[in-house]
Length: 447
Image (cartoon, rainbow, N blue to C red; front, side, top):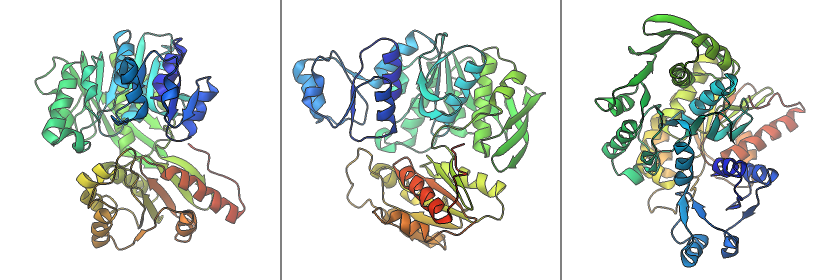
């Protein structure tokens, strides 16, 4: 929503907005001259011509009810995105994991190739300096969320499907329905780019479109990465295009095999647009991950990282990246489950996600816009996790949360917080508390 607000304001529309809480994004929009209020009131609709909502807005929202009473056109955020898609050559990036980073990498490639793209991405990348921008070029890079099925309304020129996993089953009802929706999305593109190592992504393109490009590490594909080397934040590999060596990919600030997959998807998009592999690998060398994607807060006797991962596979891949590069370090994983519905459907699957962590600290479920579900609580994850893992602690959210977590840490620990909620605020306070005790400075600029 904030990205669309920024782009439409740059297009010349008078944009106002409201949010349930103050955060970094509301402050950024105000700094751009976009009035943002906290809370919802009927009076916000004075002098308004259209109301734009996201899927998080419930039917009983007072502004939505007032818009119905006034007869105002009510648009979903996908309607605004669709208007941008219709007027630009669009690269739409979707998938269960990796879409924010992949979209940011694609936008970086196009920007550094002087193509001046428009982009709307879910999180700001330090490399791009923002999460959304109106460019003068013909290309649009859009991160497309699959949570409510509306992404099938789009007709992108290039569709990127990073992977398809078990998520948003409260909306889809079954994995079959989820898979079918991704397949429909692939049908609607001129070119679909998918991961050959992901079964769901491959099923989405079987017999459905005349052209597709694939990337992989483990299986035959158009673009393949091999000879992978991981050294803390630094990742290196060789790449081949249809069996012929195409160069070396180095990512100085993007650890883990999952970021190799993200980069391969971006390289295939660039190649399909005519960019040489040699140029693209140079453009990505110093790429920095978007906010809350392995964002380093401190490296001062201890490492604290904030990560948006909130699904079992995402958590596993991040812990795998740490274990591969920080071999003897004690890994402390903090986890804030996201949404009651996700906990209901996937709760027990989290018990295997933390096998590579030495210590697990669990805190309360972040509800987002959801109401509690009877019988769905933190115990759904905690009990199974304690059966499998020897060192699990539950620390409820409260004023003493940072103090209690701090008491569980040791010098030299690698601390990573997982969750799509507000755990990042507590991690930032934890980093501050550690520094104050150590009397040192932040080594902890976000990378």
